[in-house]
Length: 276
Length: 307
Image 1 (cartoon, each protein chain N blue to C red):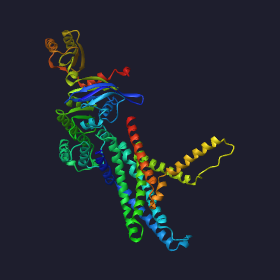
Image 2 (cartoon, each protein chain N blue to C red; image 1 turned 45 degrees about the vertical axis):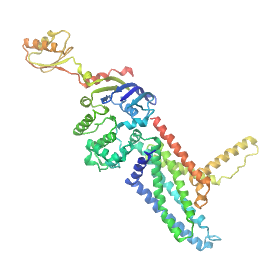
Image 3 (cartoon, rainbow over the protein chains, first blue to last red; image 1 turned 90 degrees about the vertical axis):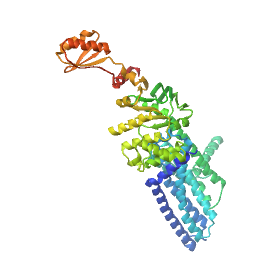
Image 4 (cartoon, chains in turn red, blue; image 1 turned 30 degrees about the horizontal axis):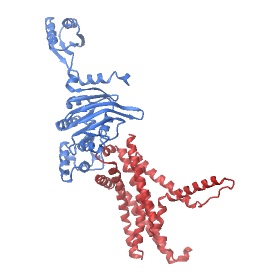
């Protein structure tokens, strides 16, 4: 695994040799800053005159300000993520440098982890920018640093899971544009399905004329479908964590999601090779 | 050093190489010849572990390509045909990255990169961005990355394609210099290049090896004599025919003739005597060796039915 390090270093450096890295980090900084300012101004208006906004009490800071901001950052990373992951493996194929990569003494694992670490590195750079609003909040409000930390963890886990998904798509695509568009597009489909899923009632009525066995199996399938579309979107498990509530199952969800797509990346990478 | 046994590769249903077998000994420099799409690149890609063969085995430096790919890759320097490079990197950074991957220790890395830069004539561009280099220099960077770590086996896929004549001569010299302590497999379709650089030739056509021998033996055997003689054509022809009836003669131009059938010293002496006694002045009489081109055309034609 020691050769994952030079792969990581080459990949990470090349983000900042080309404009890509600066564009991604710059756009993140700008939009994150605007989001923070708007959210904060909105919250302070609401808390100074709750009744003017139809509220009966001062809204909860964690719930109304912090969690939405953190999840907003998570979404921002998912918008920018395809730019980070799209090129990872697809560009090597597109430029033919895959031939170098595969004929140098590198194991598949070293290539894939090196690439994934480079994407995580970009995520870490973006996350480090979150220090600015966080320090301001710690200074000007009485928010617990631990709550902020959990919020940041939620963003990081969401981002890491999304990047593993992006890497998987990049392992199958032939150029970064295809990879990026597919990464974002398919994620967006799941996101919309999730929103529909939120509106799906827990039980549906089946016509009484149906035999019990049929009705039961329809209900069973419906339950699985509803569960899937509600659970699959990456933001589904972030809301609680972003408010500072730690649930092992939320963390496990993101870790499993990441592990699953890294595994699929391995398989896709291998199979592309065997198919020649 | 390289041992290939029954190697076959299919792309979908169509075979790229079929039941290929050959051996290359340590220290040999072998030219791998063939028309376009003959299977040269496919064979090289299997040997370097880029993709696996459909069937058959290949051993490089004592390791099986399919079973110990990492061991093979550590011992092989490979210059792919299209010379893929990370165009955004500096030349020296790129070579240092390759050195790290190939396991050159941190202490030796700078020296190794320096050695290869010098050998490939890249000293002056070491701090340039690869993407800004000319085709010739990129080709050299490609060769340089293959040489990093001083691997015992070098596999070079058309190393001189797209270079200007001066660069071609330089690269050929570099490859020749390598020959003593390296095993080199070099593919090309520039025939004179093989004649200049290689000691042994493999000719591949439609995925099969159609000729395999040392340069000398492939091009040595000749039965043609070139003659330039003065005098009436008919007189000359009669004189030549008088030597031996089995000799075929053709007039190839003003006072120029070619005979086929035998080219040994006795035949040549008889020819000159016959011509002189017929009163024809001889200005040239010499045996003509087969060129590699003849061998190549012979080996790669007339195979249509075999497909």
